[in-house]
Amino acid sequence: MKMIEAKNVKKYFPLKKSILSRNDRYLKALDGISLEIEKGVIHSLVGETGSGKTTFGRIVMALTPPTSGTVKVDGIDLFSLKKNEMKLIRKRIQIIFQDPYSSLNPKLKIRASITEPLKLNHVKFDEKMVTDVVESVGLKPASDYLDRFPGEMSGGQRQRAAIARAFAISPELIIADEPVSMVDVSIRADFLNLLRETNKRENLTVLLITHDLFVASYISDKISVLYLGKIVEEGSKEDIIERPLHPYTQALLDSIPILGMGEREVKIKGEIPNPIDLPSGCRFHPRCPFSEDKCRQIEPEYREIKRGHFVACHLY
Ligand code: SF4
View 1 (cartoon, rainbow, N blue to C red):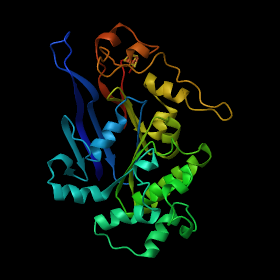
View 2 (view 1 turned 180 degrees about the horizontal axis):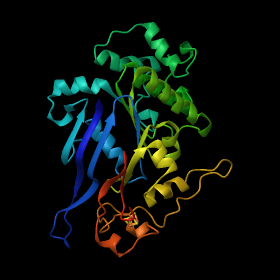
View 3 (view 1 turned 45 degrees about the vertical axis):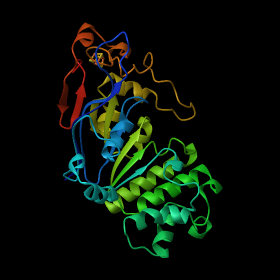
View 4 (view 1 turned 30 degrees about the horizontal axis):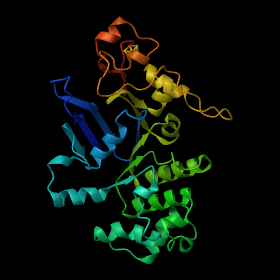
């Protein structure tokens, strides 16, 4: 059973016309993404800043419509829903942001932040349920935290509270957008374990959006690698981590920190190009060490190389 089915999703942002150009110009944040996520699976979408991964998360949350393409959540076409139907589906999806202040109102105590979505969605709750959810994310005893404002907590405690708020409504789908990038390295594993435990216990589906292939490899069942608005490789965690095919995935793997050495630079030349002026042919060719003439002229087809392992590269 599929929780997310995205077909050929494009998101183009129109740009102001310049006096030098008569044609309409667009920033192509997503340029034809098709992605299926099974229920109960942790699926990571990995890419550098500017790859379009956060835009995709916002579309799945129905925070912004795609320019074209369809997105279904549990078989329901998100962008054909009426307002009240949308409210019902939103209750089933929660988002965890990189910055907990995006989910927690600094003027509300933690208790109010957690109960607010329950009240809005007419979900019955009692003190035990609130205590349980707060303690389930490691804020123990709950009585020490429920009456604090976010500003009276550490960054790690705030992110735990934001996760408790997302879990309180028993969502079926969590979109976690860089959930650990602002959390101290020493407690990142705790957060990822928490997501994994909840995924197992509640059959929760997780779309994990991250720039960090190490984070994705820690808890994912499947991984899709996004580059300049297109998926360039997708497979099981083992396919991507142990048998990566695309040169971009290989470069991302090279950037994974080695214990005691800190983070190394991604071994690819240059910056991610501007999504307004996309390179011709394979959009990775200006940075690819294996680039040849064909790569500059012809866009590689996205093909299944082995059961469930897809790649877009002329080398295969
Ligand atoms: Fe590199 Fe060519 Fe493959 Fe693109 S198609 S990733 S440029 S080898």
